Image 1 (cartoon, helix red, strand yellow):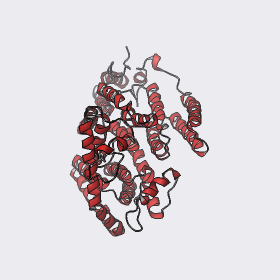
Image 2 (cartoon, one colour):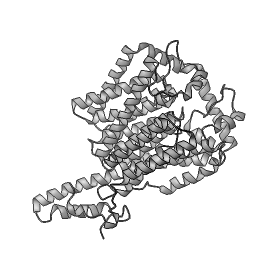
Image 3 (tube, helix red, strand yellow):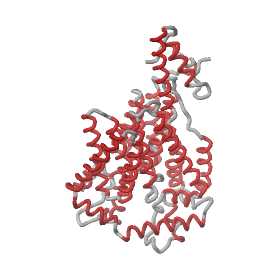
Image 4 (cartoon, one colour):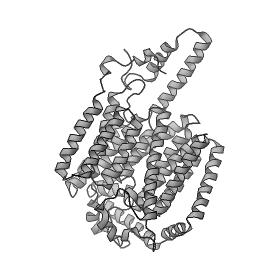
Length: 514
């Protein structure tokens, strides 16, 4: 616990009365949604659900459950913005949560800006020119705010949400729960043919593709992500999070709980019949095993993976056979190769600025460059990196890759210096980011709004510099207690305040008492 002196380090000018902030959010949010609904023609159950969701969000804010609030925003982004197609709800809520955390900053929960902020600024600026050359204002704004600006917002939110390893565990717990709930939804959809909380806005689309029929009686399930390849990428990423929690906990009940989550998500991944999803899960699992610092944990994970494989083989032989047939279908590989070649042709034609930002720009402007192997038009080149280069130019792609690599290196730095007991949850987060990045070579992973939001948020969490600062403070407290017990000279409270001053220097967060 912090002493009275250490809690008073914060200046009086930062002590803001925040008890009315959630009420203010309810009033402003509900009014804004009502006006937005009038402008967009949204009414009835959708508008009511949005208002109820904002009220629930305000209650979570009031209780100061920041980790739950962040994952709740990601769930809204998946279902409301993406599946229902409203597209404008989650990002304002994320901004409100970020402002709320800023207003509540303190020496115990300090504020932290992303490193290399100038690189993020360059990323936003270089995206403006291709954004001005989209095919429609709504399409361009959706892509810019969800893929470009939303990346910075969710990454920043992840950095300030996680300020010690306990917060990181709660975040991963909530993300695992979200993945499990979506997996249950997908399993129900695959086994019964009924979609819970469904909308009819995709009925015509499903009719044109035969409702993703892969065999006579089997359908590929996409759940709220619509496309089975996208859901496969989602489940491959989410599968690795409870795996880290499973390795971290010694309690048998918790191991059973997390192993149940792993089994459910694995079954949902099977029902997506996504070859890229399985490949990404395999790569992520390999990275996770490598990053585990204890040999016995590695053996546990390998044995557990073999058991999961045997369960899939015994209980779902037909689905497994169909998955193998789907992966070896020549037409699928031909289409992928054709999509990549077409994307490269577009990049060669527009290397610096691309053809313009938007979800539906590529299918129109890439058509003159389509190669013969791509036997039908596509909305993207089945590769997030080629997609960014084709839409916005090679310079933007280079900055995007740098923004991925630098935080991932910071996450590895945190992993190296983190206590061995906390490593599995960090390893699971790193492996999930690697899985998404790998799968983005064969689908639109980092350029699909719900996947990108989850990915950037998780990357911010595991790369947060606050993790090591909190660990340094804990180590300093241990030394303080030892010195006090040995010498009995300086009080713990005074030394603890000095430790806070040493760790959180002025200029880092502005909370050092002058």
